[in-house]
Amino acid sequence: MTLFETGTIVMTSGIRDMANDMLFRSGINKALQCHMNGDWGSISDDDKKSNDDALKNDDRLFSAYHIGNTKIWIITEWNRSVTTILLPKEY
Image (cartoon, rainbow, N blue to C red; front, side, top):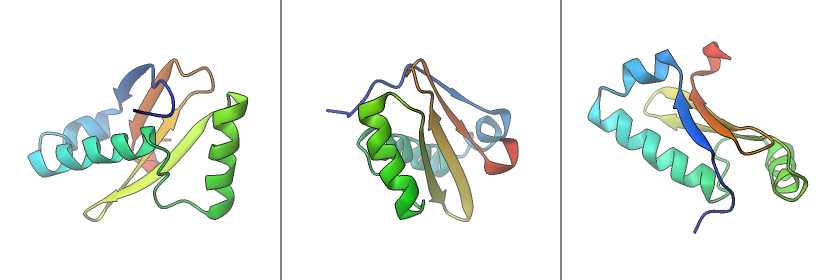
């Protein structure tokens, strides 16, 4: 069971281009599952606390993960309508 609704899950073109690789796609799926379960990945303790608070206060959720040498971000909007998977350079 997940901690919150993700809404529509979308990915940027940079992620979509890399998702053709089976291992990278598997890493995306694992990262998304971690995000939905409240494992915020490689962000600061302050950001982790902000996310924990955001679960109660309907605020935006942000997490970061590494898939091999590639860092990805996952952002769920405050109203839980959409979750975006992106490369940091695409923000």
